[in-house]
Length: 197
Image (tube, rainbow, N blue to C red; front, side, top):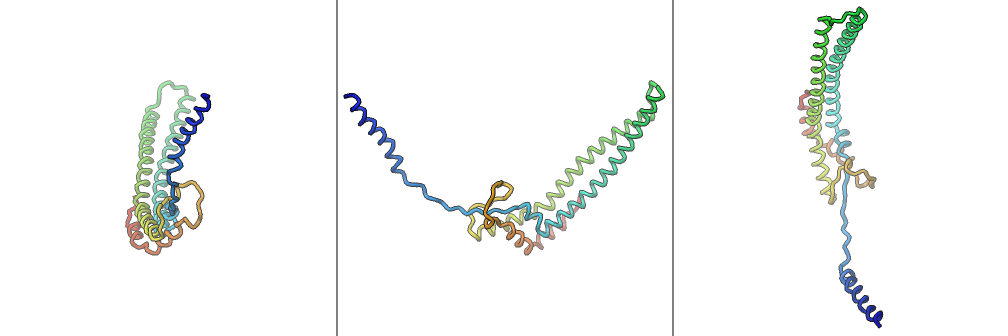
């Protein structure tokens, strides 16, 4: 008789847990409209972005030219130093030539100057890149927000943060580029006034 008493208790326990779950309302579907834009592409393909790329390339070329000149001088010093070392070893003299010591010291100093110049060039180019591109990116984001709001999108996403595929009609990149270029004079003058490092 004991098994018969357990059945009603088991049914009661199951119902006690099942009724609250069944009584909960079903979750409602929420429609969220998502818009995507490729900010990097917008920056690169706008008229201001193309001008900024050209200005940055010109500045980089100037920096590279300066660094290449320094590299050539370093190579010449190194070759001269190596030939002096080879001549000393061939002659078998145990003491170092004072000219060779002076050249080695000059080489070390110039190598440090070169390394400092390389780091400074990288820092300057990064700052110049920000100076050129941040105003363009800011304007693009403003245009993107305005378009998304006017078309009723709930979520705005930059393409570089979404490594998934999407429907082409959700991508507002082309529309943002066109609108930017139509109203570009304000940002164009800001980019043009940015001084090269």
